[in-house]
Image (cartoon, rainbow over all chains, first blue to last red; front, top):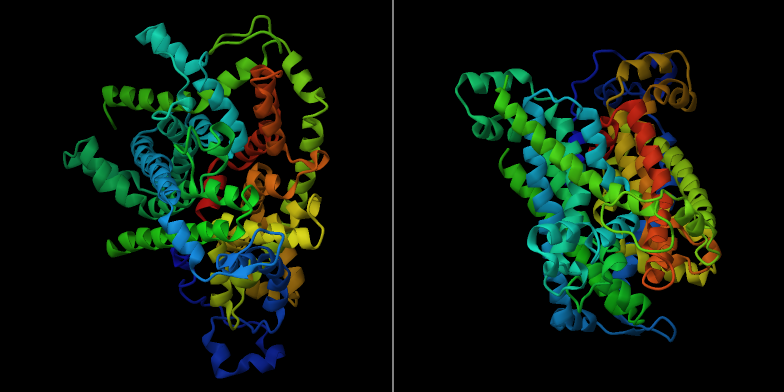
Length: 327
Length: 277
């Protein structure tokens, strides 16, 4: 949480405005010693609370309270119809001893690789390439890179099902290069379905990270690159000495955001493989959805949601620790 | 500057990834312009070009793509309108005023950026069932506004904090009250970040599939991404892949148009800045 806050919060510590407190006379109440310490601010009284209230009401009613409610549900044995029964940690014991949970954990791990780690690595290289030279058509490239992220995953799923279909685009190349007998239905294959979906996840995320990293890379002074070159640094050393340190903040935020999105993967398997074949592409979110809305085991589903939240929170903390320790 | 050979490699890599990003759109586009009957293959150019698949997708009475687009538009516009207005208010408070509890309150809002949406959907479903609002626009609009407040507050706060203090102080000394100050002094120069935020919120609302399939079961009220489910389910049966692709393009088009407009108007950095916060 503090993670995401550091970027804008840094502006809070801006030096106090030299401007005094104009119009102070009419605000006699605020002329106390404390008020003077607050750089030129007159006391807002009830204003901030009134301004926040409507937004907070929506947020509390539809985000905060449901989160706590999910926590409570995870301790219940409830089918959604009859009266719920308090079951303590039974749901947690059941979820953690169910091999399906761990299988979904492994799938989630694969998605961390495909929609967090790989996109960030590739985007770093692309942003590095873009930062060191003047690229023609950069606006167009950025638009194109980012496009996959803006599209509904339901649409993405349809586009890629076609690409992976037996007479689709991938098989067109496979047939031409490896022979007609090598064509197959990738999403129907026990071994290939997960990597195939992983490629889609990578496709969705990499441009998103490129655009984020570029917004940091454009603040790297070009002289740094010139200086690195004057020191005889090759493209690789230049990359690690100039580009990577220059986009550290953006790198951290990209990792946090893609990590969260990777663990939440839901639409993509739902609309392409329904989690199959078997359980090859079943993610934690899919398990939660099935538990609650198909199997009517609301407590179990809520438990999965809680576990997922805890894992995401822990991961975000770790990412931020790693970056902070390098400060 | 880099050598010629390095430049060549750079361009090859960058445009190769550009091709990779575009290719699925191109293939979907090409398939959709095939005749709705018969089969299409790979990246082949449609022969002849035909709008038949679009017409069939649009007129299929069971799918209701047109109606679902209207539904999605109603929901997205309401959510973006209300959430943008409320985020300007919360951002104004957090970004320009000092008050007791501000740190804790802001931290509560930012928590919503990290907590997965999945953690809220179960109680939301049962609460809306209890008050009888399942299968209504409200079941989409209210939770989406709530969910948008985390990002909106975070983003507007970050922006308003960087607003020059002197301008606020001098407007105050001219006797402007805080409400007038917000709308006459602070908001007008913030057009770009506000529009960027609105675009992000629109994309998130429009693309929200999980909430749409949980809250809405009445086909008349179906959201656009959920309506695609119908085609996906049928595609190995009566409906052809061409029709599915045509439907997908129709669902994608509004978001692509809005993203294109934002890019035209403010450059692609506007979105990146918004996401980075």
